[in-house]
Image (cartoon, rainbow, N blue to C red; front, side):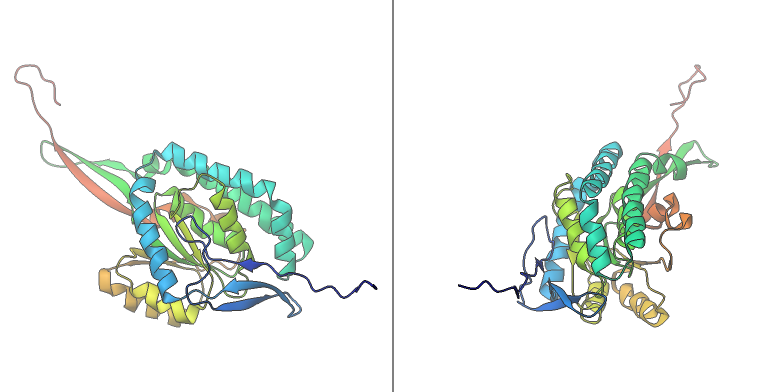
Amino acid sequence: MKKSTNRISVLKTYKLYIGGQFPRTESGRSFAALDAKGNKIANLCLASRKDSREAIVAARAALGGWSQRAASNRGQILYRIAEMLEARKDQFIAELQLQGLSRSAALLETNGAIDRWIYYAGWCDKFQALFSTVNPVASSHYNFSVCEPMGVVAIFAPASPLLGLVSVLAPCLAGGNTAVVLADETKSLCSISLAEVLNSSDVPGGVVNILTGSKTELLPWIAEHRDVNALAYTQRDHTTLSSLKTKATGNLKRVIHWPFTDWSVNKAQSPHLIMDLQEIKTTWHPIQQIAGSGASY
């Protein structure tokens, strides 16, 4: 029997990442991931509104445990993500090249993403000390302002397929929030591969949920969902941004706009990006004066 030389490659199907699991979309729909020449290179799930709802429910369920973890422990987990990403660097470089990046650009993108996880791992237990304050008041009280996570953050990922995604996700997690990510439609491979890294990096299930699908279909619905506390938008489309702000008024979501065109620049990493996804809580505590001692407590 003559062997055929025209073997058909088995294309990978990239699933969704919801609640620490990799389910297929409940709708059964999919779309093709294309390389720089327009050739099909993989299958991607086309997430539905029900998938989005399940991702939001998972993020809400995981919020309490993640936000209450010791900040140093969150830092350890983010550092572990960097370690696992380093171990799979060749895979990400290959995927980035398939999506049109040169070898050198793919290497810079991957190294930049690894370094960014390490950068925010270091800030996990430090940003509170930088941004919290003891406020002067004209009464016998102490007045403290401290940072608290906003909650469930919906992230509309940038076209930068790895570094941009990490640059938005890392400050979100460093501050104790949980995330629902809608990956970029045109370059989604690295988003689900990143989910595989997260799943093996001690990140609790539900802390990060990653969807692939249509921005037109899912973005308006996620923006209106009342169990989402903040939206992180990264594109320069001001019409869409204006629409998001309108839809976010239902439960007074904070809309954060990070319109970086180059995610490798230094200003694309900052503790101020962590603070963009924080609320400030102010606490008053009375000062008790012990008679005759001159001491205050």
